[in-house]
Length: 145
Image (cartoon, rainbow, N blue to C red):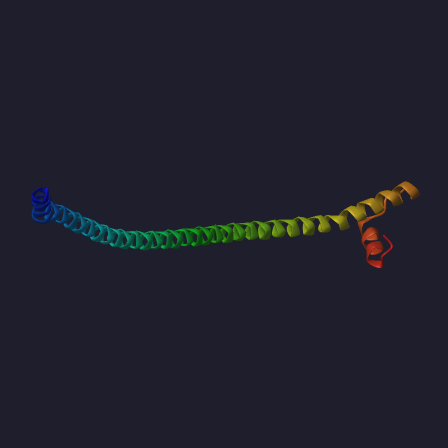
């Protein structure tokens, strides 16, 4: 029994324990290598994520700058078009005022003649005889007509 125990002890000490220890050491080395690879890959992924975030921020800034440029360009074009329309309207208004003044002047020049004719018709109706143009002009000059 002691011999069996001795043989078993030698087998365990010389064969089985070193194999199990080698296997455990190999697994520990592989686990440590895998953890190192995972850390390296995580650091690489973090760097790539930071680069992607920076590219996204730069793209967003470019897009905002383009949008602001387009907005200001549209506003400038609208302001130019508005100024052109305002100038056209001012020109039309000026022409209309000139025509209105001419029409008013023409109408006012006819008012004197109409007043003289009306006064002559009234005098003729009241007196039975038509006044002469000289009489009407003289009455108008005095302010009687």
